[in-house]
Amino acid sequence: MTLCFSLSPDLTPELRAAIVSLWTEASNAGGAVGFVPPVTEDEVRETAEKQFAGLGPGQPDQLLVAHEEETGRLAGLLFFEDMRFGLMDHWRLLRSVMVHPGLQGRGYGVELLAEAERLARGWGLDGLKLTLRGGQGLEKFYGRCGYTEVGRVPGAIRIGPGDDRDDVTMWLDLRTPLDLRTPVGLRTP
Image 1 (tube, rainbow, N blue to C red):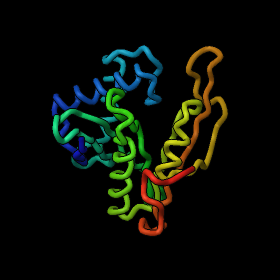
Image 2 (cartoon, rainbow, N blue to C red):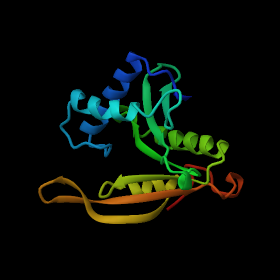
Image 3 (cartoon, helix red, strand yellow):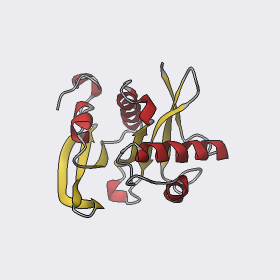
């Protein structure tokens, strides 16, 4: 199946509900998207609404959603977050990068990040930053997509008693022309 992408779609009640559902399912499947399982849709909705507040006309953030073309099913999403500080206006933070757990292993995460990179290059940005929860192998995945680890705070994320994880910062430098880089999905860390 192929994905179709929408940037800054209208946040209809249906899309909001689909995002909350995806976010809940990703969290309960062990995804590192801001929660520790088990989590309810009500808990996720509270966080999602805060993220939605930065979206829309006149707001600085943007939402990128991926739907399966054939089924229309919400397959993944991420938020481009503006730092709201002029000296950092040349890059964006990617927040809550997720793919539906039932659709993982199909390359959708790589496609989602490639689309984010394409958009960011089109906007003339110099880089994309993201943070992740250590201990889940995500550094390797993002490394294959061109991101480089640029910082790590040991034990900064407390999952539970005795389970502290590193807060890892990764950076995708967009100043190198795309045609001089290895294509997404073919990169090695």
